[in-house]
Image 1 (cartoon, rainbow, N blue to C red):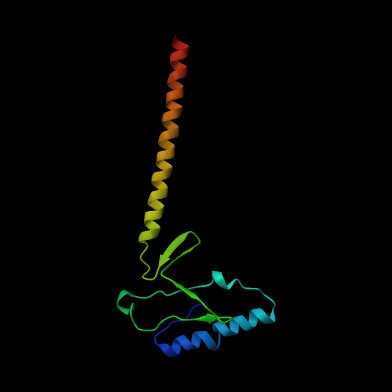
Image 2: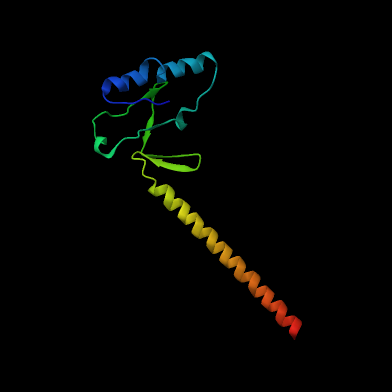
Length: 123
């Protein structure tokens, strides 16, 4: 669920009317769909110059205040509020180095074993 928030009125609109949070909760109650509200998070994407507009994202679902997060992982990609992918890139580089070290170690062990077998054959 998302909405372009420019002011406090837009924030209230997302909470209450139309396709808002309260209507979603009503829909889930009507169709007997259970929600794990502890997994719901508030994630705001904005431009750097709009980072402190003064609109605090305090949204409520079933009388529980939803937690605001500055970054989120979705489908293996780390997103942050400014859409700078530094954390995602660092994560992928670290995984690549980890795989490289595994390949180096296994290649070294394999090469060492091959050399040992050659020495055994030649002896």
